[in-house]
Image 1 (tube, rainbow, N blue to C red):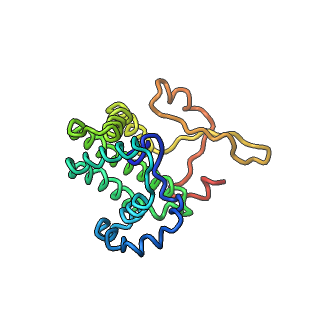
Image 2: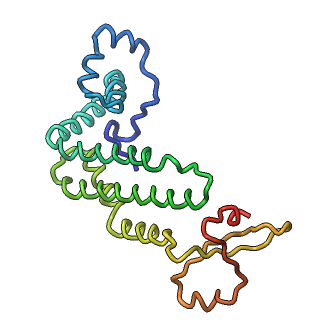
Image 3: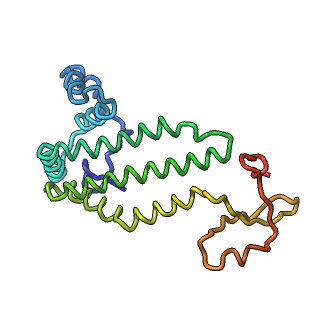
Length: 222
């Protein structure tokens, strides 16, 4: 999903190098004071503001495109701040709640991964609501394209299906997996099986099977 709020047809890349003499220009014009006021302690805004301020535009169309978006920001500050707040909240939750996804326990990795996906879905749903409630208040090409995309890509059907899949991944009744034996009696060709299919249990009731004890991560690996 591309925002395209800085340029009509490309991303705003924070990793692009600053123009030659940027540090000298910042010092001569004392731009650090301006950037500090603009950022208000937010490191992300500081970095974006510095990159945008020093990355001059030469195309009239690019300038008009960006200025119309700026005008929308001035007219609709609450909606713009809401979109930004959702983005920051997503990053903070990912860092604070899911930093231990590198756990060696398979069950922990799996449940945390599902939880992370659920958190992303909740945030996407919030973005959709912001788009629904505010799209008629915006006039710029960039914002209308962004909000329309949020409505189109995150429609009710998509959110419903995504949440249904995540609910299935909770595996409240256990996980059913089929596999074959390889040349050295190792498990190969693992397939995760769904329980909801018609006549599912009739097909699998008499299939060779075994049960792994809860939390037996080593057993599930071997």
